[in-house]
Image 1 (cartoon, rainbow, N blue to C red):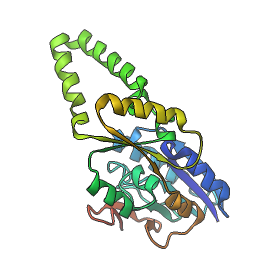
Image 2 (image 1 turned 30 degrees about the vertical axis):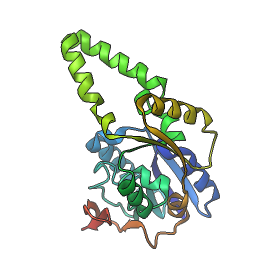
Image 3 (image 1 turned 90 degrees about the vertical axis):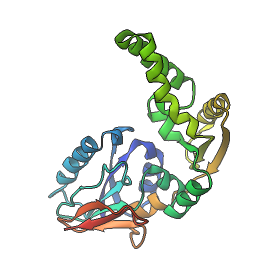
Image 4 (image 1 turned 120 degrees about the horizontal axis):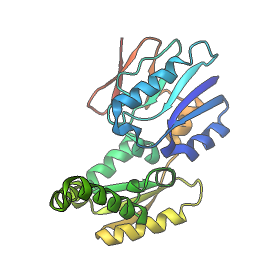
Length: 241
């Protein structure tokens, strides 16, 4: 088969590795980390590229995305199948499946997740390291200039409240690339916040199966004209006419 792969930079190394080992021809197109923060925009970008595959000789389009804040809900398959993992977000893809993701969420709900590409290719605000502090200071300075010091202090307090809900930082080691520098920054940042740190082995299985054409389970396969819908249950995604 000839596959068109649309994926997020958060999984760049994994995608390239699995594509290189795939028995199929895989053309890869990656999108910037963080676009899921504006779901309609990311959805429009993805749909535009999906539609552009028409008549290009592909047998299927594979998406290295999950639901990702509803960004993939509403995507419509073109004249060939569209395949998406049944995953809420990239954490499921890093961990290798919904069951493991669910177990971690239930047993350790206060976990903030990191991975090599996610930290390297993202902005400073994504990392627990010194870059995050520098970015926060920049935002604070802008708020002071726009709204005054009292209002800036209040806004930064509200924005930082999310940290109170977390107590563990986990670096998912996918076994691809040198993550020692990212690990050091993550450990340091976790220590400053009083969080525990853990290095956890990831699993390439979902991305590998996606790029190898093994779509029997754990994947939504849309036929031409079908649309992705969110199910709000264990299946995460389904298709509609």
